[in-house]
Amino acid sequence: MKSHHAHWPLRVPHQFTPPQTTLWDNLHVSSKRFPEKTALDFLGAQTSYRQLAQQSERIAAWLAQAGVKQGDRVLLYMQNCPQWVAAHFGILRANAVVVPVNPMNRAKELEHYIEDAQAKVAITTSDLATHMAQASDTLSSAHALHHLVVSDYTDAFDPTAQAAEQWPTAWNDWLVAQHPRVKLSQGTVHPWVDVLANTHAPPAYGVRPDDLAVLPYTSGTTGLPKGCMHPHRSIMHNAVAAAMWHNATQENVALCVVPMFHITGMVAVMHTSVYAGATVVLMPRWDRDYAGRLISQRRVTHWTNIPTMVIDLLGSPQFDQYDLSSLIAIGGGGAAMPQAVAQRLWELYGLRYVEGYGLTETAAPSHSNPPDRPKQQCLGIPFIGVDARVIDPESLQEVAVGEQGEIIMRGPQIFDGYWQRPEATDAAFLLFEGQRYFRSGDLGHVDEEGYFFITDRLKRMINASGFKVWPAEVEALMFRHPAIQEACVVAAHDSYRGETVKAFVVLRQSHQGQVSADDILAWCRDNMAVYKAPRLLEFLDTLPKSGSGKVMWRSLQEAEMAKAQ
Image (cartoon, rainbow, N blue to C red; front, top):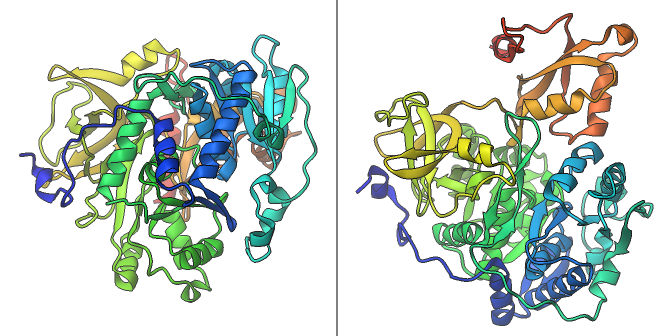
């Protein structure tokens, strides 16, 4: 018996036989079991399982008419909303592949997703449609979108419910405002309501568990994001495993405020809930007081989050007005939960904050703390079906308990590889004890009880409030600015976000004295996702370089961290 098995959650198996079905089948079955049960609650509007399945089939039928065939990739670019869920399952029902895209991304970033995924169809909302259209119009006719489906958030509204719903007034600018209708120079734009109104039959369903289901993108040290190929079986495994780990039933009410484009929101919240026949309360963006009201009024039982959300909610001046007594499970990842905040949750509600760990490549959790015996600021123990080790990254030999090394893992939720990147796929895996393991790139150790802890990164990465920022990608985008000759991006200390993004910039001689730091920071906010955009910028005459001419980013990083200390 492995050491962590002594602390395994009660009544949870170490392994299980996964369903030999697909992700679409989960919605289909739940719609038959619980047709009138609320699947989605969005700003007071209720969508039943029957309605969700019907909408997904209408979308599938339309996609087939638009020329989408089995294995084709379709971009999904939205905030959390019912349309995201319906479109996700509609794409799967059309035998196609979902490409979830961060709604914070802007046109320059979107070009890569359209071109790399070879997508001809994208589905978005009216507040974001301009960015997608601009990205497509920049591409050649061979790579541009043929179809863009655009929904208004109000397409999911229930007028009678909305009158009593008090979402933040600041949301009105994008939630209910009338946005200008976009056009595609090389394709056609279709209103969401027209897509749902089509009367065609959905195509014959021919997908199997080994077929590609989802292609979420992750960045890394090479700059441009890479698609992670997840078949139905890898996502299915973690959806079912997460349900088992947290004793999920159809009576769960899950608050989904972590974004569903991200693997955690998609798998551990949406797919797990649909598999169980539970209700998902959708928040399109974070707002601490609206979250407090939703937990109180909807009697939320399960809340997956990032620790900064909990810190923010507990810090609200109105916190004493909220009733969190319905919560039976709370946890998340992306950043460590401060001990004092975890202690307050325990003292107020008897809730143990359960931290977990995973990557896009591992379909979210590869590790999770046992719900009844979590350790704070800890990744947890290997998840159901996972074998994880800590090895010396140079010798590739397993290290002793307590010693630092690279965390590697294998299991049924590991992705199949990077889309059209065989070399990157080969580099991401290694043979260890005759088995193929995924290299996390994170350095950590395991204690005597089998719990894993992260200590450092092998890969160059910034963790800003749980969002992973890859400096090489930010630098590649910054080089598009005409004034920038060189740029190097590092992590800087931030009291709230943990880390934030700082750029060191060398200006071209022709622009010196003409462009300010604020000018470049504003340009970055306009051209990249807000969490990636540098918050700090420092001009240098030259960047430090090695004898071979490589930028010595580590020396800049170490100097920046020394300032914080």
